[in-house]
Length: 71
Image 1 (cartoon, helix red, strand yellow):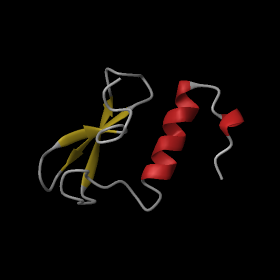
Image 2: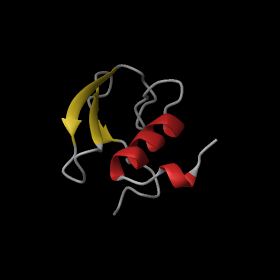
Image 3: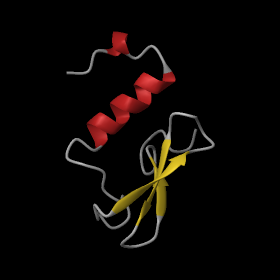
């Protein structure tokens, strides 16, 4: 269960997004493949991870295709 009192930092917020979004492992939001490589961190935040799908070659981050993706 998510306890909002634990979300006291950007790092914890991104950790929770990853835990909730990809509880069964990271999947490409474009093709649903799990063939993913980590690509460092986003310019958006030093805690927002970037990824590349080795199946469809699309790049994405923790917030891609979420309500937070346009902040």
